[in-house]
Image (cartoon, rainbow, N blue to C red):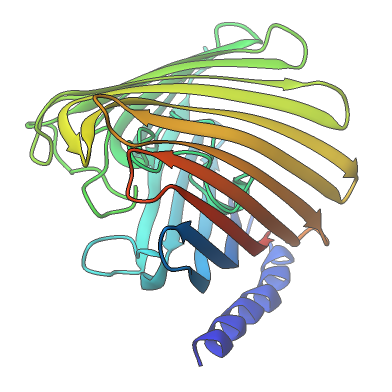
Length: 338
């Protein structure tokens, strides 16, 4: 019954999306969205294998431009309880984006409301990731999700962009899967900043940091440093690498502290206009004798049409100082978007 229900849900979304793509609301409102469904199988050693077959997540987003220099963004995000929901009560639907941005004549954009963190090479959104699973985020989870506040972005040159944000908390509330900050500034305000440079042809360099002060759900100040680069080798090949360092202070992880690092290296090859393959090696290490791993992945994607892509992934992960020694992962995913 669960499999039939999941297939029915995915099929219904697939049928609806092309219709949405043909609807023009008006000159100031555009609507976009996506949904992903997957089958995933994991075999740990030692341990018992397990699998899942779910509609993983979906988003419906409205972009409103009442004037030339003003943009409002509102989105609804769906994540079923089977995939963790969006908060500890098991809720499956949440207001994700809710912000308004104004750009002045000098090119400075000020945004207020609820928005996504600057940090991280890999995307928060399932439909924009290179693989079905993330390359890192397993223990330290150094990359924040959504929070509320004010941010400023500015491009002083055609190749440089910088920005900073003051937010309710850099990290999300425990159990909210990156969809909420803590909603107040008094006890643990957070901040983020970044700089990106594209002055070298085909190369993007990105530098960022985040800071969260001690607050209601933390025992120590939290700092994250994030550096990544991507390079377009030619029309069919590209490369990306990232290094993240997190100082979580006295926040503890079983077997270690909240301090440590994540890294990844991605290589992409487009064998045809409709087929691309991502190869990835990634790792994580928690300081003071905590768990660590190295993960090897391959993820080919076939683009069926403008609304549908199919993706597969195989990963092998080797662990140290952890309850399991290794794990094999395999999965297939359907990605609908408009």
